Amino acid sequence: MQYKHRLIEKYILEVFQYYPVIAVLGARQVGKSTLIENLFKDRIKTIVFDPVIDILNAREDPDFFLQNNPCPLFLDEIQYAPELLNSIKRKVDMEKKNGMFIFSGSQNLSVLKNISESLAGRVSILNLLPMTKKELEGTNNPSFLEYWLSDDPGGDGYKYFEKATSLFPFIWRGGYPKLLEFPDHLVPGYFESYLRTYIERDVRTVSNIGSLQHFGKFIGILAAYTGQEINHTQIGRELGIDRKTALAWTQVAESTFQWFSVPAFSRNAVKRIAGKEKGYFTDTGFACYMQRISTPDVIGQHPMIGNLFETYIVMEIIKAVQSWPVKPNFFHFRSYSGAEVDLILEINSKLYPIEIKVKSNPSRRDIMGIRSLKECFPNENIQKGLVICATESPSYISDDVFAIPWWSI
Image (cartoon, rainbow, N blue to C red; front, side):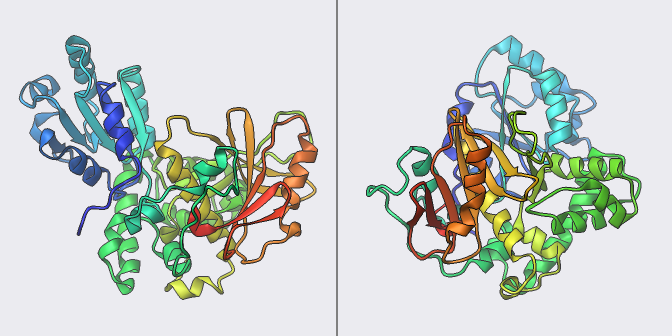
């Protein structure tokens, strides 16, 4: 299969010139190893660690391992050899060079804890998520998102993309690179194997969960909550566990890059704002499998179509900003009266509200949440709103809200 370029490539190459160590973290099979090996080709040696076998005696004698494997060095699945980190720190401090080590890992919690304790100030940590639509298609067209944040939404200088063929295949397949070469009928089998490997390797390593089968059912329930505010008490009740356990398991899913939480926006000034987090499955293909959605066409009639579409768009936005030097903060808004804004980006002290609607003709009724946000926070610097939907062409819904096609993100 031909290599597909990733949006974060240029950023990785640049950062590696200024740090002795970079760590590329992400879920299993998002393409971390393929990305690094294609970026550096023959310029770097790769060593892949294993949870059982002590590769090249790295865990037993890390100093000897480093003596026999000169830099630059790509250490894949570093979470299986945490004993190396202190030796790497000593080597970095002694040689005082940049571009020495690249780590990869699929367990955010364990890797970050060990790295932060051992290599603070010496490492740049980057996240790699499943592929974006543009990466899957091999296109490098600019995203409207950057254009919108430049304070000129809807200007004549923006070139809009041609319409995508269909939304549902992108949602149903998701963004794991391996699926590029799979026909539709093999996609469910891929996710079945992925779930088993994820639970047996990543989850078992990260957390002492008594019943891994029980945790697999929890992941299925979590997929049903994608794009919604999370009620851990209710999730626990459905699974027969307490709220504390449901919360801990959600944190495990987040630390292994399967779940992304978005906090509620508040400056602690307006008491009628609800404070629950919203959550998103990081890959809609995996979410569709967990909900046993067998084909792309089923999505159009599925009760979860709105949540899946919102999840897809939110994750496309989150993926797009991973290569930005300054990433925005992400929030959602919901008042006790029910008004809500799906996503708010905060950057440079400005708030950019986004509504996500799975419809082709959004109306003023669809932007009531943006109006409510402005009423609740009159002193905030709230910019023009954006509605991402299935409209054929971009247009203004009101003087301060702009609608764009989903495929231009």
